[in-house]
Length: 567
Image (cartoon, rainbow, N blue to C red; front, side, top):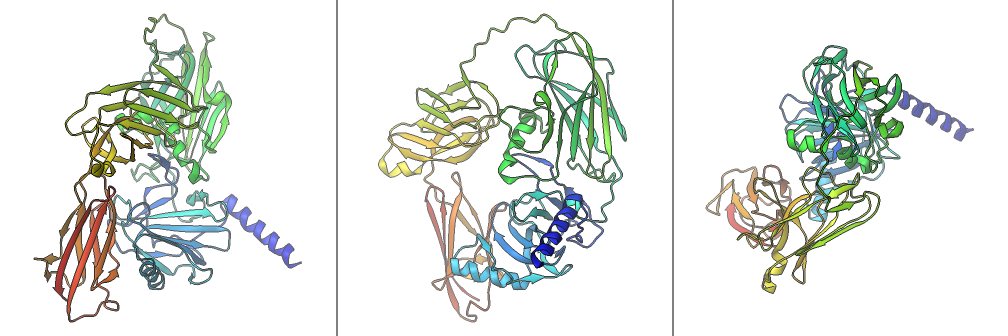
């Protein structure tokens, strides 16, 4: 009987969660607003939570949204930075990211583990029931740790079993939103070689006039198209007229009143996040910083957010007739904006293309390419669609060990890493471990890709296309003290601070010791700051100390700093 009632209760809780009836208290005291919401478009992923604004301040108390126990704590210079995971009895786990510090009982546990492991970055599974909190208790303080662009609280709700992030807007009460999403632009795409848009064979941006609940084309005349056509929209939501550009919840596309395509952002899956690069107009994002929802699917897009996908959302318009297209954009509070317009199927004579593809790469099978000085291997699933692959080579320059190899271009998205091998000129054996592949931006900026040397080839596994070459990194990182003068005078008696930078391959590791014992230096990668908060329980005060700091880059070049100071 006990198991029967347990199952009934669990089913009741899950049913409430699915219908949005389970409500948590907010993780911050109100009033509050957002700088980002669930499902917002980001490069390489959808945003999986709510970003609560903290007024530009660090140190705002963060509250447990419901009773629960700490299941996981993570600390990293990247990603969510200081992050806390609390498991709740209703089958959900809440996540709090970019924190500045944890509650003292969590902080003590984390620091003990960092000293035990002798590393700053940790990802800890907390023993069940060791640390618990009641709804509304302070669990941490907000910050800007990790890959944060400014002070805020990143908050998620995940299904504990599947770890899929859920839309938090269905769980948090007291969030008013009576304003509709905005539709800021319409895009038309040719999908096959016989497609035309206004007599051209390239995509078109159509200007929109958007009002509170309806949108129209600036030019209300029917748009002439022919063949297989894709639709895209530029759209956002602003949470009750605040003017903040957040993401939308769902889109429905109709052709002559028949549903063609739709998606809805109730939950997401981390292992599918990179498919966002297929969902969006990737080229438009790179070139013009515009985020476009494509309302049709590339064949290699396997994301599960799509509801209706007749013909993958592609409009087949070759009948010489006029057609009505309707797009309904919704937010999570059922506010909508509707765009209706006409497409006229009309074919026009076009000049015959004389371009001949160098190679065709297929999305559903492995692909290989080889030319003088370069080898490329793409596993199945690297591409979202078939690609007329192009390759070019540029001459060797003085700063590289190889030519610059243009692997197609940066405007085509890549889903998984592929193998790229580049031949280099002969170098001494002592320098071979210092060779690494770099990507070269259009402005000449170098970004490390890494890789390994073997028999005059350097092989790496990039996750983008673009220009690549091989360079040497023989220069150790730079260590600049910020709180120690002349290797002896401590100018800040609460923390020892450095700025550490590297010229090319990037910081890989660091280790600090005082009087021969490991001490916890914390690293903020976005500001290059490395600091140790003087721990009076671990450091004997009132004496002269010897500090030794070693910093390595990714090519194992090491820098060392030593000081003797009196606290």
